[in-house]
Image (cartoon, rainbow, N blue to C red):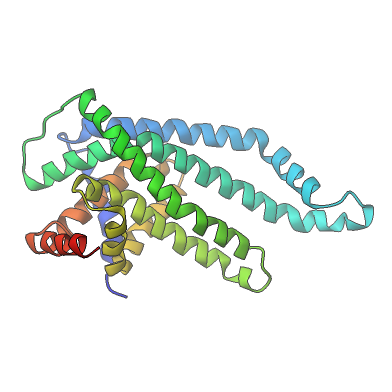
Length: 259
């Protein structure tokens, strides 16, 4: 596999460093607020209903027979993990759909900043114009993500195979984070969803390094509140430096013609 995971992780760190930049700071605000509000909502929902949801799942899967009650203690942590995964990924999907136009707008401004172009605020009309395309792209990601998510979920319940399930979840999460955030600058530059995946696969270790650190950042309290805009900025830096050279653009055009 090609690429450098350390270089990939470095793009996120550079994205974090760039957030206070005066020229892009106004465009960071909406993705940041969206992430904060939905994160708070997810935590509230989880704490309010967690025990009830887990007990409901146990009662659904485990007959109410006294001699089977010992299985309650075995199933509880497994189903608790399932609930956490569903809430975490569910709110991540919602947050990404809501914030998609703003993230695309932010990626555009960051790319202009990196290229030395003049950054102008086109206002809400520019954001509104992005909504149909951005939501369509998010639905394409969802269509790619859901079958793989369900497949991994099934594997997690198969004896022996489930021993490597945590590693597979981490690897899958890192890959999906790379797809999620690198898609914004690539979509702005009219790279199709299929070819975007192909470009990331060609530099898989770098992509996994970037997405892996994004995933870790999302698990760190307080840091997870700013990780969305930082990942958008980092992914745009990645795009500009790794893919947007004239030679890379030519390769991309050939890829588009051949697909």
